[in-house]
Image 1 (cartoon, rainbow over the protein chains, first blue to last red):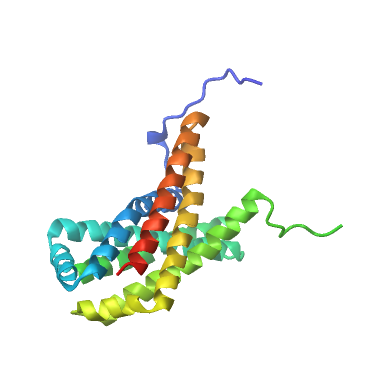
Image 2: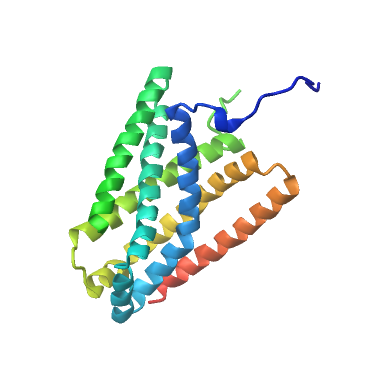
Length: 124
Length: 115
């Protein structure tokens, strides 16, 4: 069955509810974390290989560019974790209604935003 | 007739369960490591290295790396299935990611037991 009627699909004109934004950000932060895996193994390798390497790594983490790089990692981790916890609540039947889902999504925004700011302050 | 609702032979349910169990393991580890770093300001190399010198830390770390890889495998499969419409490309990317994951797991093991 092929439907011949035209379909309006200009995604840029849609108004997305917060639940949808949390969902897509959960996905994007997950892909970002996937890309960070090699860096994390490399950083662990470097930090454990010798005292000089350890110091050099900490020194390099003091650059604004690398600090931002680490902050993106922490921000992705925090958001992914908080949105993931919401998933676990929904698995237990909490926050599955229309209103509960919206409240949960807003809570994810508030909690992760606070934690991301705290992580930024801690880094700088 | 046995109630087979929790038999893990179905792909969707198995993926769902793996995603939850690995998430809990990774979350605990992330809190543990970040907590250790926060509790040790001005940390020296010796403290950091001694933490990872225990076999329990090495095994926990390897378990977490394995969990990350399983978790990311299911996540990337979901993303590829949703956005890559060509099954050839999808297959190619999945094989690429699988090889990459095997390499990362081996590398992680070498790093953990090689210092």
